[in-house]
Image (cartoon, rainbow, N blue to C red; front, side, top):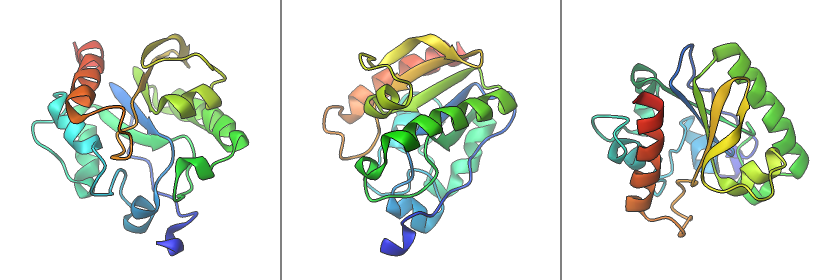
Length: 173
């Protein structure tokens, strides 16, 4: 997987999305495959289904089907790394600016950052918690969700389904 270090993955994005999901950055497995949340232990696709965004569990290879459900995917930092801890503060802060440009161009109604630690750093909100945030990003409502990585032991699948489901109810009614 070392050959995947620094690789990028194209965004899954289009106009008028209900929700733009923003990961921290691609992992090496995603970098190698070219698909978002591709590592078998990642719980993003299961959480999306369990929360009611999709009618079945999509595979990473079906990621473009999210567009038909009003959802898209981007990342704060484009380059693949072995761990989010390999990113610098500067990269995360620049990722915030990059995300703002993406939001201005594509105008999703809501942006969901997948990882409270990355959000706190990128947005300079040291005390932020999971859920809807008081600020917006280019008129899009802003949420922070738990990172769906299988390494995130603080949130079990049922927790992810509940929290992602709350976002879905707010975004899609």
